[in-house]
Length: 171
Image 1 (cartoon, rainbow, N blue to C red):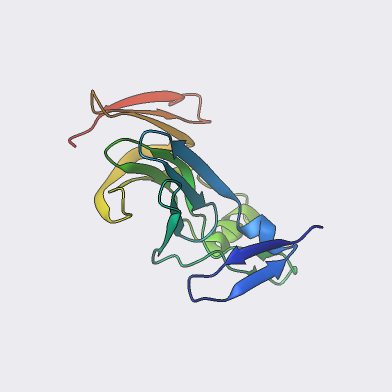
Image 2: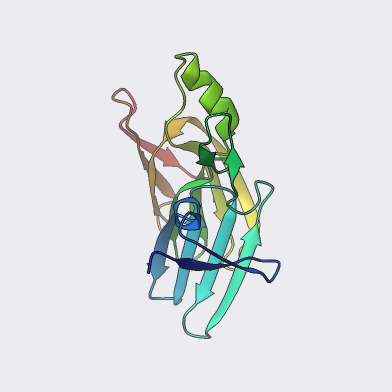
């Protein structure tokens, strides 16, 4: 019962109760274009499901699919922190991405150094999953909300000094 079957873009199927922790996803659905999009918190996988045509696309970025790494303490973690949020608009798919290396983050934590919370890359994909814009935000943030009609991006962060921010997007 505690088993999750996840499709691998290379055609394999993974079945593992531990896999579920790595395949944690954020998702959003837009009923206007019938797109359900999932993005993984570990690795760099964007899944686009068109519920009207019953079709799916899997876009794997440089960070790869969610994967296991074992450190000297036996902990299992993904190679990188991936997507932190997703929003499916009428014109595009908007994501918040981290790309932080888990091993480097663990080293910093062991030394008592602060590590970033959230992501600072705002990535815009067309509705087919092609990357069309990339923005480096001026701080790490935890969530996004895009208003396409006014080209405004709102971000929310766990940081008190940058809790809510507003950006005008050159889209």
